Image (cartoon, rainbow, N blue to C red; front, top):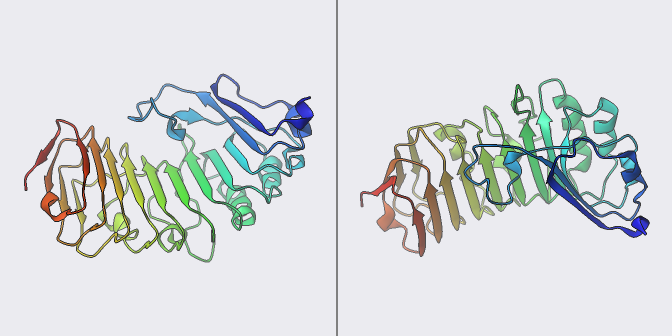
Amino acid sequence: MLMFLQLLNVRKTQIKRLPSEITRLERLQILSASRKTEDSCHYRNKQCSCNSEGVTVPKGVENIENIEGLEIVDVKGSTHSTIKHLGKLIRLKYLGLTGLTRENSKEVSNTLQKLSPSLIYLYLGACQKNGTLCWLPTHMGSLQFPRLQTIKLYGHIGTMPEWISNSLTLSVVKLHRTSLQQKNIRTLEGIHSLITLALLDSSYIGDELVFYSGTFRSLQRLELVGLRNLEAVRFQEKAVHRVQEITIKSCRLSLFGKRNLQRLWNACFDSGVKVVD
């Protein structure tokens, strides 16, 4: 009867490697798998990819040709050929990869390029011990995702890729531990489709974050969580003028310009936030 299985969810288990039998599930459409880990993520009580390690997939994964959702695959523990064969799953709409390193960045980039026309959701996580996202292509011509709506990044990235900052379709950007500065956040200002921006767990390392006048015109939800270096957030007049919800937690900072947020109806601040005006 398993041959008719369409959805398989084994998230946050102790499974490290999926069995080869998984490749026989020709009708499988959604495969969600991850290993449970102890992590300091402030969202660990929610369904969050950032505190999960991936699982390795077996040889022959390309046989699951009807699959539309696959996460979280540990590319560090997978062979180069397996990473390459992921690129044959051209129906994929939802993809999560973790374990990215300098050594496997080329294979991962080639796979993403093949899958980019169909992807709607993408999670990319660096290897927790020595991984980085810095070696991903950054230029617009290197990767293009014409349908991508949600991007989640976990790990140091150095600079914001142009294929993110120049996107015409992204509505959700969530960043974990990316170690970005003000200049990097400014590259996101022109994404007219962006509705949700989440800066989580040291994704931003500057001591001040400014939302400038006339920027983030479509933004409705803003999350600032676990930004230990951040001391001040400033909203200039006519900045994020459509924002309706703001969450600031696990930060100790002063908030300036709240009066400029005329459409704000849900502000969730913890005791570390001091509203100045």
